[in-house]
Length: 265
Image (cartoon, rainbow, N blue to C red; front, side):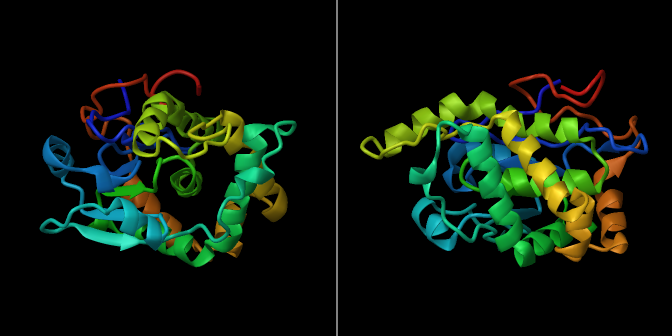
């Protein structure tokens, strides 16, 4: 069983189904996707996207990124939300090799947890509305901003931290293709040492530090995002089902999916 879906111009489009929650329920397949920029969808890629019957796209990029790289093409029944959650732009010149890529990324994700409160809450509300499914969440690489929101959602429905970290790190399977594509589009642009990387340490540090600040990831969502039990209940109703429910046939290429059988990766 694999998670990454085949697209020609997208490299990190994958299904978040199959992860086991604390009560033994499982995240349904074909309900919640994460991706790199949908602005690159065209031709056969666009046909493949439409075949997924996605109803809602949550684009976490800044408006100027949307203007430069495009957005998902309009189609009947598709609802698009641009919810930029990043406040402070990255200063990659501040990267310290001594502390590593994981630490640098985790600190940026903590900034998102501070700066993107209103839009993170709106994104969770949108995913929790059954009428919006299936939902795709994306940014530019489908790694950082998308990783933060996905981690929060999976935490709220009770997925184990090890599986959340493993899901984040699966972006590493797309890094080489993503970086090569970016180099083609920006041949003369500088690239910091951590560009495109998604080390498991980054997500583990982020979740640890968020819990250290607020008591737990769930407490952060309750106290800062104002996500109440009613919303969590709706989110679980939308995303979770029995282990026997649904068919994980949509993903078609890439890597084994963690969290379906056996121990967490």
